Picture 1 (cartoon, rainbow, N blue to C red):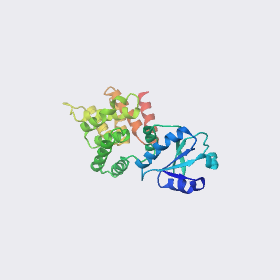
Picture 2 (picture 1 turned 135 degrees about the vertical axis):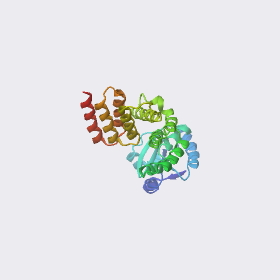
Picture 3 (picture 1 turned 60 degrees about the vertical axis):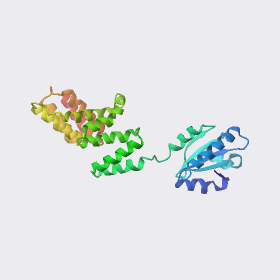
Picture 4 (picture 1 turned 45 degrees about the horizontal axis):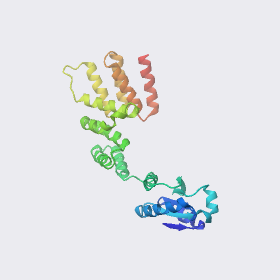
Length: 270
């Protein structure tokens, strides 16, 4: 762990933080908690070698820095990235707490795969994207955003049963999260499309077409079909149509389109 003087701070901390995070421990030799924290940071500096630079500065010998960063008590530990102090804590912390503090600011091991999955998805390379989403969730099963994106991708590929399996862990959260509730409706729609009605009516066919468009992410087309169905046969699956529209409002990224169709739905219902 490198000990710096005040004069070297800009070069060794601010400039270095443009390339990797720098953790700075403002301490003093007379400070009891500082002496207890020191060995923990020394150990962590070895564990994070190559990913985070650890530095300590004697606050008694750095009055300008203490004023600049408003160091009012010691130990104060600050994390720098891109020449800015992005986080800090004061006082003695356990090793596990400091690890969590640092890890929050480090790239996650699954981020590279997630970025690639999203790129492949945008390019329409759905099968390849699926493999990278699987890798992300194998590394970090709690990656909720990736899980929701993957479920939608599986539905887009007409793999409703697999989508339902990946979604199941999120189902308890649907009452408190509108986006998860919307994906739940998509999963149910995908599963229903696997069951062919014995004697399909025109309304049955219109509903299936609307749901297929919805699962494909063709939001405007799906909403047009749902509205047409509502206009033609209000008694047929009326609540399902309304719920489907509300789910699309939640998932469609185009706020202007959502606003237009909100007004159309409201006009039909009222």
